[in-house]
Amino acid sequence: MEIEVNLPGLLRESAGGQHALVLDATTLEEALHNLRVRYPLLRIHLYDEQGQVRPHVLIYYNSDNVAWLESLDIPLRSGDQVHVLQAVSGG
Amino acid sequence: MPNHVMLLVGTTKGAFFFHSDAERREWRMTGPHLPGWEIYSLLGDLRHGQRIYAGTSHYVYGPTVRVSDDLGETWTELAESPKYAQDTGFKLERIWQITPGHASQPDTLYAGVQEAGLFVSHDRGETWAELSGLTQHPTRPNWFPGAGGMCLHTILVDPANPQRMWIAISAVGVFRTEDGGENWKVCNNGLPSVPTGVPDNGIGRCIHKVVLDPQNSDTLYMQFHGGVFKSTDGADSWTPIEQGLPDNFGFPICISNSGALYLIPLASNEQRVVKDGSLRVYRSDDRGASWASVGTGLPEQPEYVSVLRDAMAVDPLEPAGVYFGTTMGEVFCSPDAGETWARLPGQFPRITTVKTWILD
Image 1 (cartoon, helix red, strand yellow):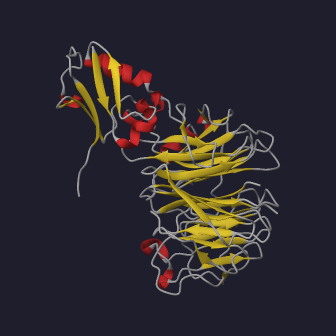
Image 2 (tube, chains in turn purple, cyan):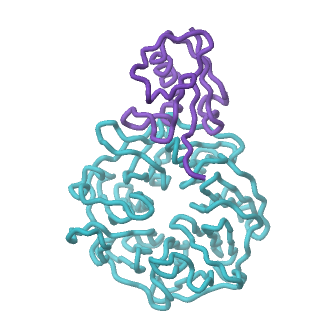
Image 3 (cartoon, one colour):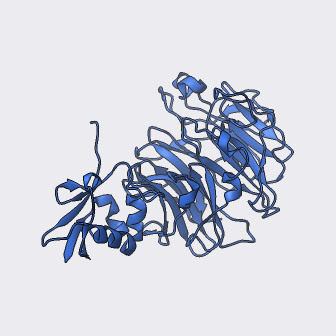
């Protein structure tokens, strides 16, 4: 199954200039793993040294923040998307 | 005489490069380069072509090193940028300084980072290793960050001895190695402690910037949190050198090839802007024995600005060019050792670093 990953502008150069990536995976967990392996610069920008998503990075699976999901072992369906966002607070 | 002089200016929102000739009176700007990224460190390196290293970071997306081999037209982000091993428990938040290795090590670079640590690359930045003798120093549990974060902001390599280096960490102190970075000695004797809430343990010295005398590797000069200091014994001890200064607080200090020292006093730890809105550069022509305000051409109108620790530089030409950038995004240039000043056109984001580069 293919899943599209949309990136914020600042990170496009870290993915070869692409604003949207297409990854092959069967589950969300596998998709995020493949993202880290295939794009090591994105791994640096999205995850800290402990492997945790950086505090102000939001990774959404469709309309769900992956941090809120009980499990990432979710079978992918046609049309699924991942969106990388910068958490915003304040004015 | 060189016919291409560059000024590399890093800001909290990208980098701006200025090009001139040996006269250094007319400048052409390019940029913003790497827009949107914080640029806390820049290095122009002629050892293999014309390469610019940039330490980039972002409060959301973290830090990496990027390089350009075409004066900023295009950039490559280094996938093996400095990073702490998972088991260290440290987080790399910002790259504060990128410094070339000794002349005998043309492929070597050092990177000073926050949280404080030192990394080395022996392959022109392709891979980096932490010099863990510093972060495993017995004093490490007593290191605490200052207002600017716990940053390793100064790296000095002894031109006479590639094994001998000094580093400085804000709110921690000066350290010296004699064995290329395996072992480090605390070099804070003579420096007052800053309030940390714990008994004085020899750490907790808030170093703002240190320079090495280009003519004597045992002589160093320091802008401290509250004081300006000199060492004539390789940093084993420090003594104040403040005669003629209106205030002893400030951030940058620079030295020219001829030994002239430059700094910009600020009005106290509590205010951290120039005193009475008067932006003035102070120079010492006697190795710190006395200081005096120099130069014409700096603003006469009130300028309640600051100049950050890495935002002042001196080029190696004769007479020396002196440059600084303010927290309000202004760049000032003196092509004659500080005697006359002019502001370069443009207003930029908060300026974090200013470096000179003589290309040819």
